[in-house]
Image (tube, rainbow, N blue to C red; front, side, top):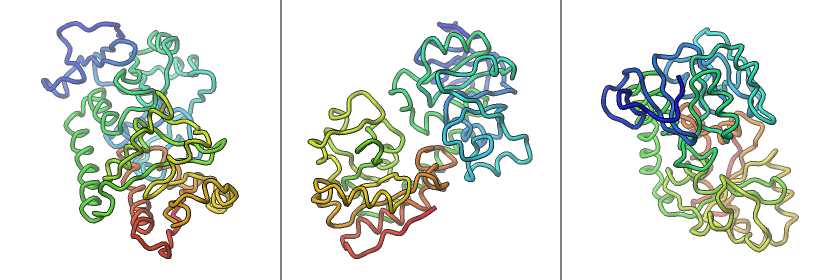
Length: 325
């Protein structure tokens, strides 16, 4: 059952005792939810939780559309984990979850950790099945990938395996930092050319990726964009873009480069003059992985992003930053 408060008996998701035991109670933005037994039918109304589930050997019966580029919303970095199981049904979420379709799927648990679930939607979903909303500690769509993996490990009773998965990816980050000392302390930012210049704040998973590699975000980034995962900036704050390296997520590199070149203000920045830009094409698997930021997508992404960053920050403007897909 789903409850607004917990009894003393169940293990809380943040607890360290009785790992893998049920019932388990998980705190979130709208209270807490008790899961009585290991769920067999899982529906995700968040946008990336399927990767953590698949990494732990659990195939959800339904996912929620986000990138819309892959069957079941399962990226190429994760599809081998299906291991012959049916591809999940894909739900739409335009003005809210599809409650009737979700109810028809007879879920044992509904997960919306990486989401902007409203209180109204939460209570409607909770009447269908135990529902875990986004954590209150972070902005909407701001939960770190590590926490997503660990929370899902608790939900499906595989905490130790989840912790091992997280450690494996964190070890990969440590290796990259060791091999690329130029990354440490260098200024970086991720942005798009959507409706002007849109930058990602410190709580966005894309920005956390950069800090995990050793980079530093602009000190006043969050003050400039407010309490959001990201926001468009005014022409007066174009200075935020002038970093040691700048990652642009664009439709195509050619379109992005042409748009930036036409802006005299941006073209005058040092980062543009010295060609310390990395272009990630949004419609490629690499571009989708850049937005996913999960325990399965990160190794796929790092294979492509790290060489680009190394080329952009090597101190030589003539070093080409090659595209990747």
